[in-house]
Amino acid sequence: MCFPIHTCTTLSFLHNQKATPQSNMSSHEKKILVVLGATGNQGGSVVRAFLNDTTLSSYWHVRGVTRNPSSESAVKLSKLRAEMVSASLGSVSELKSAFEDATAIFAVTDFWSAIKTEEVKHRVQSEEIDLAIATRDLEETWGRNIATAAAEIPTLERFVFSSLPPVSQLSQGKLKHVHHFDGKANVLQYIRQEHPTLWAKTSQVLVGFYNSNILPDSYFGPKFNPVTGKVEFEGPVSDDNLIPFIDASSSTGHFVRALVLDAPAGTILAAYDEMKSLGECVEFLRRETGRDFVFVQRNVEEMAAESPLGREAPESWVWLAEYGLFGEKVEEWKQLLTLPGGLENRIGTVKVDEWLSAQDWSKAFQSA
Image (tube, rainbow, N blue to C red; front, side, top):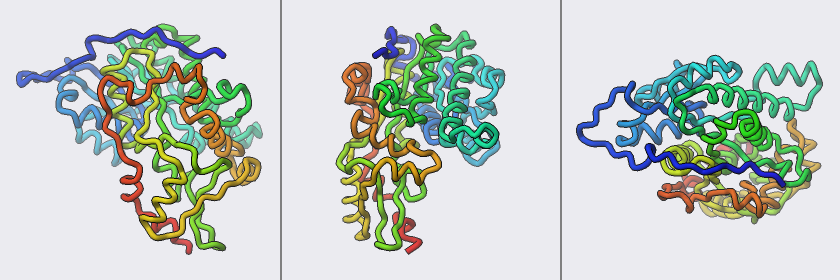
């Protein structure tokens, strides 16, 4: 199998930056970090990781890109001294303007927000195309637009792209419907083939399984069963498979900071807080709340028939069980991954049990 491999080069000017009492750099003198999706989970975490660090904020100006700079979330980031600008992922020219003079760019695309767009709805209705495929195509378009714009920025030193493994490729065609992984991976292939200069500056952060994915109102979350009176987590595989959980809104920024400041270009970083099985989470919730949480194993076809995205979710679980969320069970691919323990500096992480304890699980039983 063919895997994207980088030539690793270290940016010495990004290492060991220390603020001095005399440091009083203007925003025009600072290095510029541009953060896409700045008001989202990943992007917001990156903005905060830089601006809440007095040393980094002395040397870095953070420019957050969002659809609405006047939103409540954007205003909060402005109060942290982030410059908030508007740009559409559908416009290369707007992205290029947002990237002006950037030293580093953090780029993220969101499959789940793409689903809600009028563009996807129109394609599904007019072309009778599968919803998941239409969504993947739009996410890929966004990613290519980002790359095309970034490739034209002469000041750019580091491009960090939030990606996921190429499931279709690594499973040798067995799993063809995990589109929210493959779309991102396809963008990386595009960069490698069409923008080699940008590719030489690119690192990838593979963000793990969001803790929030197991909340009742999430796509992957549990559902209340009025017949049994229990809240059911479900999946097509057993509940003892280890999942790389991450509190994305808290931890992502620390991993991206490591890719910008410490790790060489070409790093593929598996970003997660803690490995834990869904079964362990269910058992913890039983003990913590005294309520009935259970895991129900179902088959792929049954789950696919009930979802507007078909096999997207059930095949995601099969991928995790057989290949690992990051593809770490595929030997050739595993060799390309950097795990958190392999970073130059230790990343502070969030314990899953602590996160679970802080959530309001009574909502899961509200229909009881």
